[in-house]
Structure formats: C-alpha cells, structure tokens
Length: 262
Image (cartoon, rainbow, N blue to C red):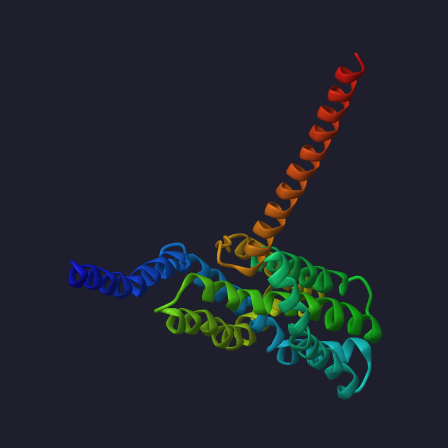
C-alpha cells in the first residue's frame, strides 16, 4: 500500500508540469497567421506605397516647379522635402505611445487625415515658410503617425509567417518610390498643365485614402491598446459595483435604524 501511494504521489508530481504546460498553452493568445491578416498586409502595403511614394519622390516632382514659382534658390526649397521626411521619422516615439494607447487603427486614420490636411492646406498660399508648416510639419506628423501602426498591425496578425508578411507590406515603399516619379509628372503635364498645386490636391486625396486602409486594421485582443481597454473596463465595472455596494449598505443601515426606532 505504501509503495502504491508513493507511486501515485510521483505520478502526481510528474503530471503537474504537464498540467501547468496545458494551462500555459491555453493562456497563449491566438494569432490568426492568415485569414483577415492578409487584408491587413494589403492595407499596410498600400499605405507604404502611397506614403513613401509621395515622400521619397517629392524632390523629383516638386523641386523645379517650386523653384519657378517661389523664385528662391534650391537650398530653401529642398528644406521642404527634407523637413517632411525628417518629421516623419522623428514622430516615431510619439506614434509608439499613441499606438500602444489607442491602437493601430485609430492612429492610422488620424495620421492619414492629418497628412491629407497638410497637403490640402499647402494649395492655399504660395509661400516657402507656409510650406514648411503645411507640408513639412503637419503632413510630416501625419505620415509619422501612419508609418509605425502600418507595420505593427501586421505583426499582431502573424507569428510563423510574420517575417514574410512584413516583407510583403514593406514592398509597398519600394514600389511606390519607383512608381510615383514616373506617373505623377505625366499626370501633372497632361491633366494639370504643369501646375504642381493640382498634384498637391491629388496627393492629398491619395493620403486620405490611407484612412480607409487604416479602417481595415481590425484590432485583436492581444494588442496593447485592447488589453488596456479591457483593464479599464474591468476597473470601471469593479468601481461601479463597489459604489453600488456602498449605497446598498447605507440603505440597509438606514432601514435597520428606522426599524429599531419603531
């Protein structure tokens, strides 16, 4: 009997790691590794295609027309394009905080609207310092807000195929950089009579389309923003229950006091 009891205890000890392992597996978040994730990859691809296609081709498209319009030297005009790319990359820390707090979907939409607004406002006044603000600062912050969530959202939807999926999404940058310097000057020549302000409007519309692609980035429960939202919801529910309990206890005490007085 003693030997059998010892064997049972040993089996229980051996089963404990297995049970712990099973619990650990159950708690692991489910990553689709496909499905709607490929829609996310397509959205990220298009965002990079449009955003990087615009930012990396600005010098080829706008330099000469702006030199003629602004009557300034090449250095002043080039600062517009350098400012745009610098702000886009410098906004990464801000984008990280906002993405972790509010989620990739919302930040991508806000960034697309902001970038589109910057290009649209730049049509209203031909002034170098005005371009620094509208194209460089406003559009730069908008592009910076889009850049990070477009990659992060892909990572949440894939685990085994993550590198492959992110690689496809990043291809949009290269293809956009190749495509925009070819077809944008052709459009400007044939449809806008070489007026670069018409192209600013066109690219404003293209950037606004990124808001639609951001809308497709359906958040998963494993996203930090969704976990934060769940914690806040539980905290609010616990606070509400505690408040209700306090009110109920006060009512019970009041009723008990009235009963005793009677």
